[in-house]
Image 1 (spheres, rainbow, N blue to C red):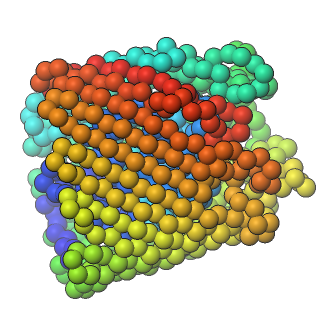
Image 2 (cartoon, rainbow, N blue to C red):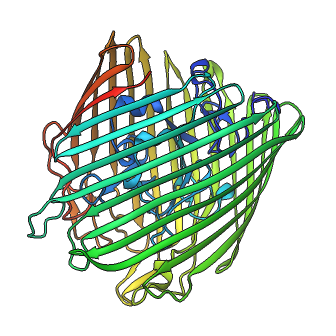
Image 3 (cartoon, one colour):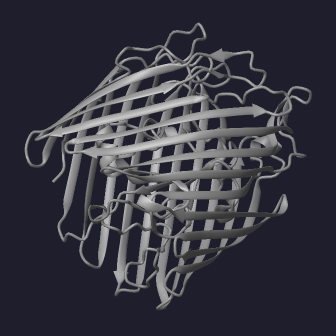
Length: 595
């Protein structure tokens, strides 16, 4: 049975996770319900990627670690820094909502987030919620929500520096540095990172060249508590990227991802926690052809969120909130409309009744362009014998078209309407030794799916899609051994044509095995994906592939360590997007200092 107590821990703030992971087997998550609960308690399908797991994986950028998540597939247009798209539970790449420390981010023109520009060195943890969440967050959360939490200081009372230097294949160099600290009343973290790579020829177009990439990032996060009932936090992230690629109209890009946010949380009464969050995010891109300026697309997004969590008795929680979002586009390309806002109001009730857990949520969004849109969800959980848990849920979601889909000259279609979805899910989970297992089955139907219509040479609401899937997840700890694995099977089709949806693999398998022997750490990962079609007509098929990654780490001294990894050991050649090469065998070595 869940219990809710205020104000001691301030756990109900959507951007704060203060629980000590060493004191609980199940991590605390906040994204699934916008309130704090353990991963075992939540009725949603959630994956938590901790800082420890990020470091153990030795991954460099966000897409590398995300492909481990059940039900999630990453499509890359080449190597480091090249455009990356995320497909969650078979939905479109723009059907996933991305938050950074509670602030909504992404491009209003493309309708998606630049995952490839997010350095993992600046991330403390990642929460991936699979399944619709429009009833809490509004547009875009058809496939799910990915929330990124930047690193923060601790209440140790000491300054903690960190620095690492890495070298790898394709003349890749990376440097990370940071300083954090704090005491019982406050904390701070400052992080810096730089990445440069010469890259390789990412596209099969007859042109032989290297497509390089560089990234510079900085994060700052500071916070302070006032007694046991109030807290204030500020956070800022900026990541600048420069990318070379192959193209006839443009072949270089300079991009900037930036988010600035502030949050105050306070206990108004013993049973009422209130938080106000303000934020602005920027997605900026300048594009060039052989060094000559070609185009500029800048998005500025303002977010305001007021959330109130009211404990009703010991085991029930009522959440009421208001959201405001304003998107503004600035470009050298003329868009008929360059600004729109969205006002949202939501309510959620969480109840624990003996062996039963219930969650109901409703939301109403008033979009400046598309009017009012209502969504809702209902979830139920039942505690069986032997700590088994049965769950079921139903939810609706929607996605407003992007500015490119609506207004890009010669392409956009101003008559487009929002995409709408209905999802049904059932799951069973339980403990297994020192780990857990879970099986989830689901079906999502999407109406008015936006796709390219050759008759008008642009996008149209022409598709009705059905996606069915099953996810199996297993984690296990046996002494010094750590094992995790997941298998996803998808059936996805355009109901109007019978064709499979493009760029989704129907089978995905991820296996990770790690072992710590004193100062020595060993690990291996296997990733397998089945074949897929690259286009709507299913005339271009991409073969399936499998990769094996190996890694090793060694503690040279108390504060010093060295890491080495080889990715794609057998140098498998494959594509996740037609004509774009994925990386072959690569090597990476890191020397790190971290007290």
